[in-house]
Length: 402
Figure 1 (spheres, rainbow, N blue to C red):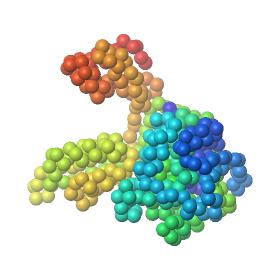
Figure 2: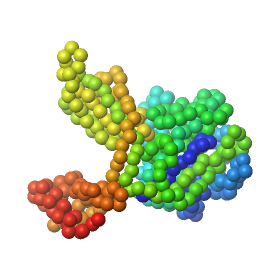
Figure 3: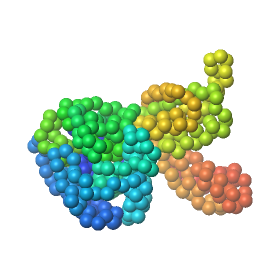
């Protein structure tokens, strides 16, 4: 499994992420071609080698009409403000790989949810301002393109420095971290760092929060490439660089951290509980369930629980508060070991069926037919689903896979 570890020792921004991935070996002409397919008039990109505090890195530039760089933020005053739907339409029309498109949509959706919360409006009403400007669209889509060019399957990240002080944006003078940045990184390990300025931007925070599976020390990996992406500023207490380490996991079994959320309720119907569990899973939770309990005053009730990755904490809590009557949600961080999961397809008399295969240390530990595939095939051929399950298991065994 190919892993990218983002070492954000001096913060993160969209252009720094793209620059780091290019520096690690992503092909720039391929990136430029795919960004051109967004169909944004006048958009052009370039990348060049530069130095920050004596260290080499790659600076990614996005050139758009009427835009130029300042010490702090690009000038987007001449660019149209965009809603989430406008940006998702650009992504959907572009010539991108499916995984690239899915990742870009996930980042922008996560960003829209954060902006909606800090401004107290619905997601569909969010004007993206700086983050909706052409250069930031190119940064986010470009970063997702680079991930695919490098074949990145999984991403991890260091604790994220935020900086301090104030920054000027479309809404005026704002504290650092910017409100959207703070919201995006809820539940993730952060610190101020030795910076009297913005270290991590909303664009960088959205990318890391939406796509990184784990935050903490670098996991065990065989590093094959190291890249550094340069930010706009030069000088400061640390080199203005973001470092990415790309390589293969040392062991096909994996471990990560998840957050368990739980809330006690005594006035929810079974229908509400079931619908809430479905919405938690749709919001990206790893699992969700309900357990019967007896609460104060001997009232029967339920503990509604969910497991989520750190980047999905805010979305999961939003579901629990919106869909139930709870006034509080508990959380705790758990460490878990995982099998390396992959899907392989086997032929059966009822059509192809995916098999979910779990490996540890290179050995198959378990292999289970995907129930949704089996159910669909059973309905199409008017046979019991257990017959399709049995046929898929037999096809897997006959394949003699290890």
